[in-house]
Image (tube, rainbow, N blue to C red; front, side, top):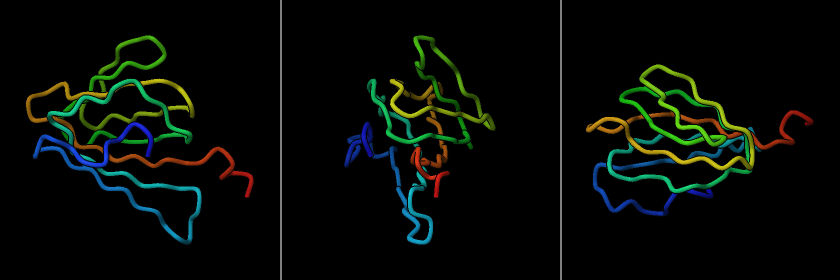
Length: 105
């Protein structure tokens, strides 16, 4: 996925993608990020997610945001955003990425 490194340099950081063969056009993402800071990037899909633990600080649509534990985060396709931990222990989150044409099937 665009914006996500193949490998993290901080051993506390981890991420996993899942593609479900019976649901093409959906991608599941689960990550724990402590040391990595996502540089400005975009995704080609809609993103809907939740912060499980910790908090994320991110820039989206020109404004700095804070997503605390148990919050819901949404992103539109092709919109530039960043992401980094807002706590020492990082943040754990889950996202579902939905291709724009998914609903037309």
